[in-house]
Every structure is written in C-alpha cells, then in structure tokens.
Image (cartoon, rainbow, N blue to C red; front, side):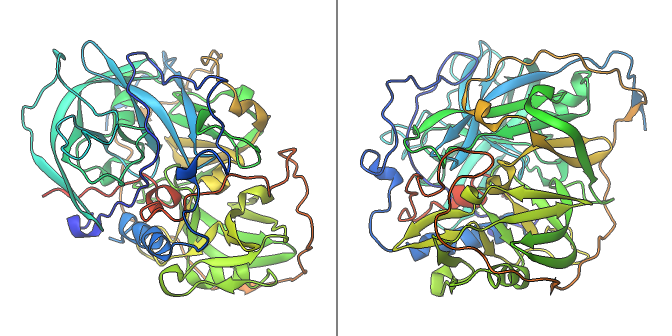
Length: 509
C-alpha cells in the first residue's frame, strides 16, 4: 500500500445518533420526521448549483483509495453463522450496522465497507467532536482494553491529517466475539470526514489492505467454524420512497452463511483472479446500455459497499454516455461527471463472468438540477492491465440490485437475484437456516499475490436510441424514479459517502 500521502478521506458530516448499549442500533420510530425536500435541510443542496469542489473530491478520493500500487481446518462441524441488521442512511446514501466493543460490551454504529480492511473509531478525546454531537468511542470501564504494542497512525486527506493510536479489545458482532482484536482510536479528527450518525468504520476487505492488523472478519472466520466460508450483504432501496426517513432499516448482513430467504435461483460466483486477494475483485466483461453492447474485454472491478456511486475508466464511461441523448460533460472540478436529461430513462446492465445484471433505472440518476440529472457512473483513472488496483469501483448504486456474496474460499464474489427487495426496508429477523456441512477442508492461508487479468478497449456493437418522456415505474419498485430525496451535493466533502464513502486507505506514520 502506498504511503500516507496516497490515503485520502472525503466523507460527509451529516446527522448524529448517540451510541447505545444494546446489541443493535435503534430503529427509528414511525414518529421520526421524514426526510423531504422541506424538512431536512442538511440533505438538500444549499444552492441551485452543483458544488464543484464536492465533485472534485468525490473523484479524487477513489484515486487515492484504490491507488495502484498449510494447515487445514476440519469441516466436520462448520456450523457457525450470524446476522446483523443494516440501516439505510440518507435514502441510499450509505449503509451502517452495529458492533460491540469492550467488557462489558458497548455498541457503536459503524459504516460497513467491503472496500477497506481496518476497524476504527473516533475517540472521546477528539477535541473537534466534543461539540459536534457525534457519538464518540470510549474505552473507559472496559476490563479488556489493551494498549500493549500501541503505535500512532495517521490518515492523510484533503483537509489535513487524522491521527490516532492502535489498540486491542474484545469486539463482537453477529453473535461472534473476537478477543484482542486490533483497531484504531482516532484522537485528531476533522468533522466532515465521517457522518455524524456513526462512530467508526468496519472494513471487510482482505488482509493485505489492512494497516491496523488482521481484519475482524478474518479473525472470526479463523476462530469460529463458519457454516460457509463467506459473508453476504443485501441492501435496501429508498430513492423511490417519496418521504424516506433519515435512517431506517436497510438490509441484511450475514457472516458464515447466506440467507436463502433473501434471494432466488443460484448464486453466480465470479472467481477473484489469482494473486488479487486485496479488494473484493471481479472481472467486469461487458456493459449493455439501452440497445448498445459495449465490448470492454476484462476489467477488474472492486465490489464496494462503502461506495455510493460507480467509477470507471474514462474511455468506457465516455462510451456509456455517448449512448444517451442530450448528455452534458462536466468541466473543471466536475470533470469526469456527466449530466443527462432527467426525462430519459437509462437502462443499463453489467456483465460479470457470463451473466448480466440489470440496474434499476431509478438508481442511475443521483441528483438533479434544472431538469438535468447527475449520472451514477463517472470517470476515474485507477488501475490498469497488470496492476493490482481495480479499474472499476462498483458501489451501492449497483449493489442494491443484487444479493452480494463475498466468499473467501475459493476466493470469489457472487451475485444472485433478490427475492423481494421491498422486504429489505423492514427490520430483518435473526438468521435461522439449515446449512450443508462443508465437504472439503479449507486451507488457513488463502492469501496469494500475482497474476494479471487482461483488459481491452471499448467497442460498441449495436446502438438503439433511448426513450424519452416519463421514467415510469420499474420492475423492483412501484414509485417513479423522480420522487427522490434531494442529495447534499452542496456539502463540500460529501464525496466520502458518494464514492468511497468509507473505504479508507490508512497510512501508518
């Protein structure tokens, strides 16, 4: 991983929820004030113009985040699994869950990020957090807090450096408890780098990306005999809700098993290329937009729950928007972004392996002004052929459309068709399933490096015009895509949420 100068954070400062002492974050009651264009001003644009510094940071954040740069366990009793409620913040802005730390355990809300690998919290001694209302982390009263071997670390980003120290503690989630888990406590923190509703971040990517020790999920998979060598995520959709709450039940996160009630058909697994166990990577082999099929060869895509939008190579992104009439290219700080007439319904699908997965048309426009919508896909130069960094970052705009599975052995990303997306907006019951016993041993060391998937240029094999007019209903929702929350594009550092929301590259000083 590159030095600290390559690790950037740009995350929105938004609402605040206090920490709880329960095992899961509280569910907003039906009396909570709905988020509408007239009620929650912090989720509105402050002006009628798109904030260009926001777009610039949004783009540059991903460049920094994804900078290029023997024994076996017995399968006979692999039966452990668990689940955790996800919450949808800001109408698909970000997704978070609850994690408990310390003895006795205290629960804190953390952003769930498959694009990074570290666990960290904002500490109570953060001077700028004292008056912000953020629920900060405190180790006071815990009998298992351990600073042996503690070291300083820092995160470099546009606004300056965020500094903290490493520590070890008992960390629990989804019914699984890890003793002496390494994590970070941030002491110097610039507000605006993390939404005020959460206290920290839980990274779920591979060990090579971690700067603070072995990721929690890898320790859990090692300590507990997981029923299946994987974890899975289902994300809710609220953009079609005419009056979404600021925070509400937003999906399911399971470890050690999949939840068969949440998907239909088979899970289509795409192997992670040999030597690329860093981010959760899958070769993207094609894109269909309207009637146009883009032949892109094979380009690595990071599957990232901590990213709101979708970033890709400039040549491919340009080819995508070339198929949409009336597109306007962003300039200056908004370079790489594209705007198109909101009356145009964009139908796009992504091919991973040999299967194509459509994206709900309501997920393509992110925000709008003066009849022009900001597209959910933007251009960013990341990795390339033969490099370990991905060329694409595929975030929640796409992941809301599939049941996503992250399998550590054999290493793969899997997608399946969601069974009933509408149920994801309701509190999820505890996982209770029957799972098969593993039939072959799983090596303890599944991390390797090396290998290089191919990449190719873009070829458009067919073109059909897009329909204009009413965007209408979609197959997954009953509401028009035009009835959506007005996003906070005027907030300077909303980038952290909108692209790479929380997947941080941490640089150790």
